[in-house]
Structures are given as structure tokens and as C-alpha cells.
Image (cartoon, rainbow, N blue to C red; front, side, top):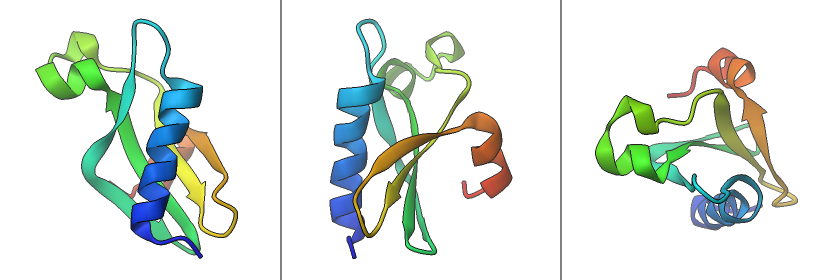
Length: 88
């Protein structure tokens, strides 16, 4: 089973590799993380928004990053699925 530190590293690597693209990079939101039933969940947002706080820089429609605690496999949840979990 992964610990929170390992899951955090995997989640950011996933964002860097699979979600960030030219013009919009993503980062984990500080302190917005939870472990539920063997899975780790992380809120994320565009780096530009995290730096500026300007809503025009905000990524809209993205959900949490989910890391499977056993396999380390990562995927993005949709906004609706994330809202239903209501973790943060």
C-alpha cells in the first residue's frame, strides 16, 4: 500500500505527463488531499490560477486526481464525480 507521500508524487507526475499541456500546466492544490478506502484523492488546478487567484486563469470542468493505493495507477475524475465525493 502506498503512503500519502508516494501517492502525492505519483499524482503530480501524472498531471505533468497526462494533463498539463502547452499553455496550461496543472499542480496539486496544497492541503487538498484525502485517503478513502485505499484510494488517494487530490484536488488540482492550473498553476496560473494558483499563482494569481484570477478566475480567468482557472481550469474549469476538471475533477480530482485519483491514485489507486495498491497499484499506483492514476486517473482524473470528472467534475460531477468529484462533486459527488465532496472531499474538499
